[in-house]
Amino acid sequence: MNIEKDILYFDLPKMEKKEAIKLAGKKLLEHGLIEPEYIDSMLEKEKTDQTYIGNKVAIPHGTLKGKKYVNKSGVVILHFRESIDYSGNDVNLIIGIAGLDGDHLEILSEIAVKLSSEEKVKRLINAGSPEEFIGIFKTE
Image (cartoon, rainbow, N blue to C red; front, side):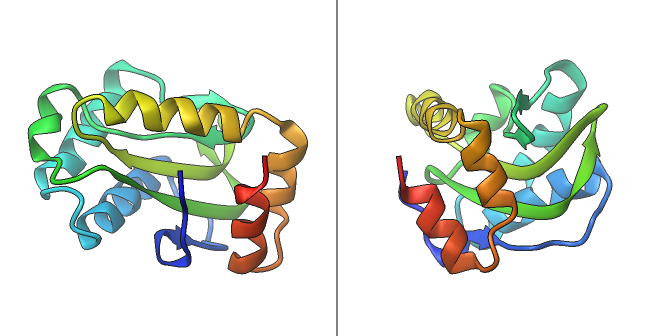
């Protein structure tokens, strides 16, 4: 997964979980990846499934029905220096996902591998700039 500065929203102020999911959806929309209805689908998904994957990372995405509102695959990354409460879990990185067809699972798998190291996630959270964050993210 290639991330660039335009999909990274760095050092955001602390907010409620629902606000953060809506923000991720809004940013996916701004990048032309989704239709507005997909944001509702992301919120609906949270009611039935946990999108917290551990290690201070959450990956909100839409329901199966919501896939029809995905224009193209991609992600946005929300970075919070101060943890937000994500259903009782501390979260500092939210990766909003829009995936077409099989891309969805591929994106999830890549995120899981990239962010499996607790040390790497700590370095990402503590990065001093978007450029530093991207540099850390791109390393294996």
